[in-house]
Length: 272
Image (cartoon, rainbow, N blue to C red; front, side, top):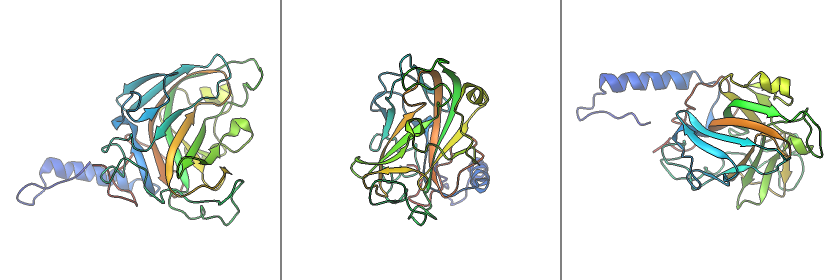
């Protein structure tokens, strides 16, 4: 949103009120961010923001995009957000382009493995990658089978950088590290039916992934290219999830009010 003045250079009372509300929202944030997206501005069609969505029932909501799927087998596919498809009014770099800004996340490691304790992720203003989502349903098949473990069903994410071959691999369901925080609280992400029941229907949740506490595949860069979302990986679940937005920030963000704030990034000048 842009705040503009009239021909006299005076801000109208309505604009002034809007600016005041915006300034209060920005002041209330506990974080600074290099990039953020408000998915209520995104579309719900193939190649209209999200990709690889044919296996999901996807609908537009007033506050995001809803993805519904019943995994009756231990499926490993995830849907994608790829730069180039993002609407200019829906993310904080939109006034410049449809891509993620360079250096919006850290270049944590030049090879495969876990970043060292003194990696460039430490102190980086985009160290934490967060997904803001609500769940209307998350029903786990209670019977263990093959890769399906009903007591280990977690929200997972993969971040692709550069040309799309170097990965930030936040895949806890395959033995690696998943999200680091839920709503700003460390090591609190849900994994079993009881824990998921506590957040289903409870409004927006912030799943935060740490670029320091992650497995790196090949050689990541500071230029994100694509993100793959998994309500769980290689698990049998029936779920309905609304994605509200994403944030690259200096600390784990909390609390969140919708829409996700996108007008005051540290890189770029806000949406178009």
